[in-house]
Amino acid sequence: MYNEDENTLIFINYEETIDLKSFLKDKGLSGRMISKALRSGEIKINSNSCKGKDIVNKGARVYFRMEEEDSDMMPQKMDLEILFEDLDILVLDKKPFILVHPTPNHPEGTLSNGVAYYFIEKGIKRKVRILNRLDRDTSGVIVFAKNPYGHQQLAGQMEKGSIEKKYLAVVHGIVKSDSGLIDLPLGKHEDGIRQTVRKDGLQALTKYRVMERMQDSTLLELELVTGRTHQIRVHLSHIGHPIMGDNLYSEMEAPIDRQALHAYSLSFYTPRSGECVNIKTDMPEDMKKLIRLLKISKY
Image 1 (spheres, rainbow, N blue to C red):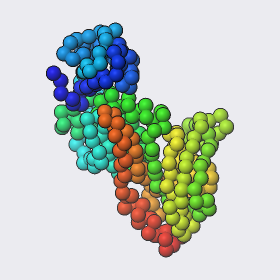
Image 2: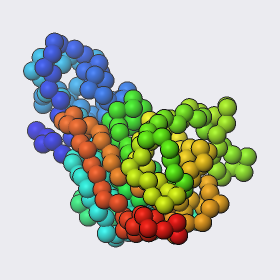
Image 3: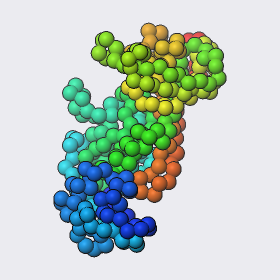
Image 4: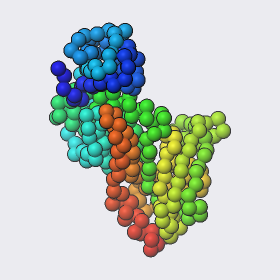
């Protein structure tokens, strides 16, 4: 029978008898995934082919095989710094100045191109699926799914707010409160490029904590409660403490050539084992250099 791998999920029914579709939905699979697998004959109960209305007896094993896919991304060899990997998830440390996903103006040289090459190298026949996007100039922890199940499971955790995402940012000015919550709704700016605080926007919540106060600047730890586009950058700019080097949301000069924002910590539950994983990555050298400077000078 199948061995558990990137393509095959194995579920054991430890409870009472239940119909197959209900059993798989209880395991977190979407109706769409289940229907597709049933049509292609990729679900078996023990060693038997089955239908959605079939019964899963107590102690039975259900084998759910995900069809392989053609890559939708041009592969490019790239040095990837892998922080964590299992059958479903790939977590990388993203360096600044690299796009996560191709755009019409930048169709190659992105992190997704590098992941596509890595998949081919490892014999993983999958599309590239991103779980959390980071801006081009933001560094830090970023998550890719290695199959549809991994993507669905972590996307569900994001919707429920069970994934904890923390950032470090160096901002202009001295933040007086040691900690706080920024609760300001966000929506599109009239320029069509930026986000802005607006009454008719979507709820956006950002927690912050002062890590260190320097010469007219502050190092903050930030936690995203919601995940709106540019949320941290807009919130900090709106309260009068824009991120240093953020040319989109600040007109103030700073001795760093990108926004001083680093996604340094991410916690989630692994799709198959349910184990809580906390991944952290060190602050990049350009931000360390900035902080050393700000401790002794206003630049």
